[in-house]
Image 1 (tube, helix red, strand yellow):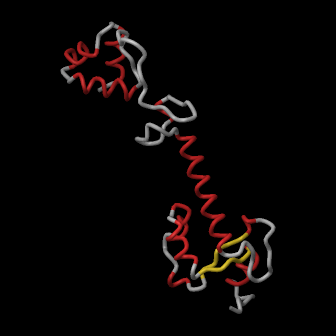
Image 2 (spheres, one colour):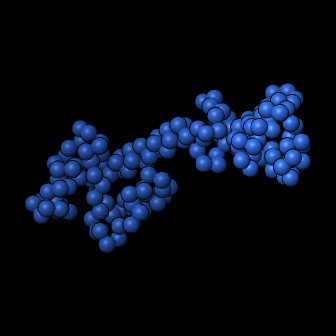
Length: 163
């Protein structure tokens, strides 16, 4: 249903049933589109309960992620970023938190996970932060930790791992 038509009918104080009759739609369809456009008829009895309610208090339907009515986009993004950070921290800790060649450990963002055998590297490894711990553990069995400098030097053929 078009939003403009609903707005005009609401301005004329039509009820949901009257809107359904006027447009030739079912009342359920009218309610669906009113909710979708976050529109309210003037004769709604009592407070209207919103389907969109985040733990942070956000209720504006336009600020929600996909079909999820319980998490706004901002909270969803924060949860995903936090989970990603935790998975990366877990992987770094499992691999020793320092470069195996030079011992660099000052900045965790400067450490790379290096696959010893690229032929068995999971093609979706970049998305590792969304994986289960078990899947991460399995992938890390054939990995080691290198700082960005040593990692670049290794791939340029200037360093050997000597494992």
